[in-house]
Image (cartoon, rainbow, N blue to C red; front, side, top):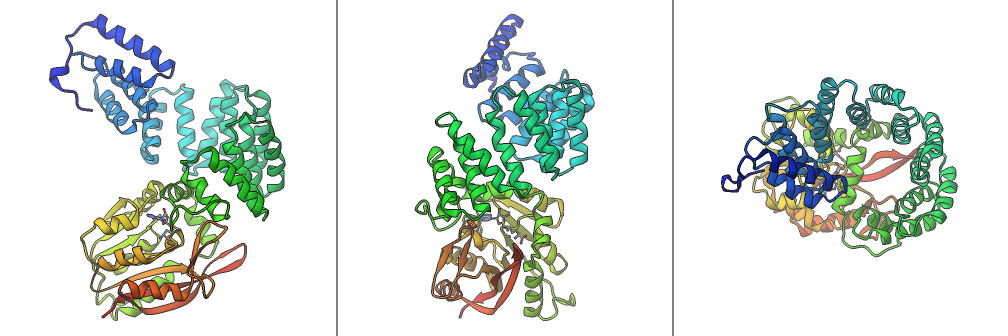
Length: 485
Ligand SMILES: C[S@@+](CC[C@H](N)C(=O)[O-])C[C@H]1O[C@@H](n2cnc3c(N)ncnc32)[C@H](O)[C@@H]1O
């Protein structure tokens, strides 16, 4: 945050104390906007302590201004009088901004600075749980609970950690305990139902949620309807799932995630011809730590098949006599495609994705020259580089109409460059369809027509099993396309 020298106030310890006290009271009453004004004035006073910057950071975080909050927290931590607990605050801010690794680093620093702080241990445990480091997360949650065994929030956190760890019985026992301890036991129902769904007992979840939705305060049922939609869909009661998602979406009309699910089940008209950015981001941010394990379990083959196809297309590539120039990996996710191509690279490898958590996982592989958080069509339309390979592995299933993405990709191909993409096969005679699983399919004729319209021709159009779902093969196409003449 830039503080203009002209705005600095004269040093007056009493004014400073008054501003901090008033700001603290406002913050406690959740009046973040007014608190920010107090703390902004306080930090202009020469000699303002680190605490003033910390309070400003807290108010900015509360006010939803996480980027500025981070700057204020950095300033606070850089001050001579900084306390280790400021790491707790910066850890919370980093986590809100999607920086899971930074959040964990600060949480660990806060625990080291204040080993008896339950708050610091709780944040560290949450970060560990989100990173699927379950044993360590459970260790810290247990430590916090030892000093406050009757704390409903602490028990709920531990239950969630068990749920994430796949220990659904332990989670269920704790959720039942939380219901008896909590002031508002209804708030626990959704988590308890989620645990039942994950434990493979969707009918039990449905019973709990149907009872809860009848008792919920008007206007507060959105999450219950959303979870109910998921539970109905699990057991194939799609008409009821459609109604449930529709109810949830009506209660939160700005929510692109709920809307996409309602549209996929035919309960609402489509707003666009692809999955919304919010849907993609929520799904993949939530899925990032489990993504690779799940896809391997589903027999995901696309990167391997694409590797064979590109090697067959460029003689000498497999033997290392020639190398690929710049490569654009669109919807790169955790970097499985980049890893498959890594040994063939002679140029840059640029990854683009909407999900920061997927990008973080890709970054850990240390193979990408650059990772951009962006929507892929917008990114292609802004990019001026020409690439020898543009690849979309398992990404076009979030797109219905293909014309715009194909045209944008064509414009990014260098002379002699190729595009590789996978498609989930739709019914012959159709164009594109949004399925009840909220993914899109396209027919082979439509894919070919959209390519022709964009000046692309298929060098290879393979029919492939892309992966398995509920034991059934998901059939699709993997296409290597070149510039038409
Ligand atoms: C199923 S994953 C595939 C990831 C990777 N290509 C692979 O093969 O493992 C789909 C990825 O595409 C991203 N994605 C989907 N639609 C997108 C869009 N319009 N813009 C940017 N990323 C998108 C998702 O965030 C997700 O990481």
